[in-house]
Length: 339
Image 1 (cartoon, rainbow, N blue to C red):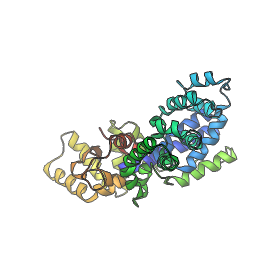
Image 2: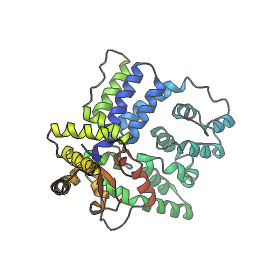
Image 3: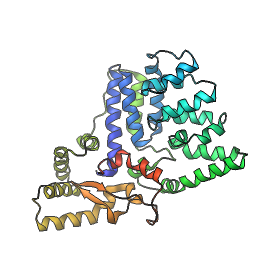
Image 4: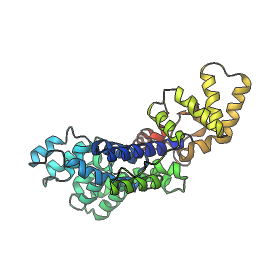
């Protein structure tokens, strides 16, 4: 239960709250929770439920009357409005592409990926030039680029697409590895994982039945604590509670957190400091999960029990990942304790 578990914890907690919101009839709140869960783990089952809840929530928003109003509404669209706008797209590419680019600024969203995949055959040239859209395609990103490259006839366009494919190569190699499920979850930019498939299926069952009698899945208290740590990483009290819980279970990460918390307070003696180094040497790769494949572990720093500073590197450890990939990784819940 460490940095490698943060993304899964965020997803599970938000799925649970989405379930509760659906049972209460609050589709807007449920949609926001589902999107947060999907961003954390990119699970296909969650994306399917986003489509269902999004359609229902969007019906409460005014319909799109014309193409000009559609474009105007893209500027300040929230997650519910986005669903409404995607139901009726303008025919003119001069409005459609910049409007979708504006929607993409909200961040990764499986609904935008689906639209881009549908449009790739109709607007290959426009999508090629729209980096804002391509970089938000997530699981569809690499597939879309390959399809556009195969259909391209213009030499300049082919050259541009070749550059995009080369830019994706490092991350594609990472995703091709058989990493442990926790690491693979957030590395799955080019593939769809099922790290939270069980809770996602539980939510799907609740969504389809729409009955209050269906029990909300009970979560391990450690999952709740991890989700809080991911949201407020500067708060130390919840880390102490989490450390106590892990120590009760005999998990060495609990001892490591407790010792580093004491170190922050200036209460750690020499023996304690040596114990910290032993625990780190024995367990840091396990704690970091899939992150270990793209982090320089020798330069990795832990603060209050969690990784706090580090550098993303290529698989061979000799070359930094591209800036775009590094930024994408740094914004994921799995590294939310980084400072």
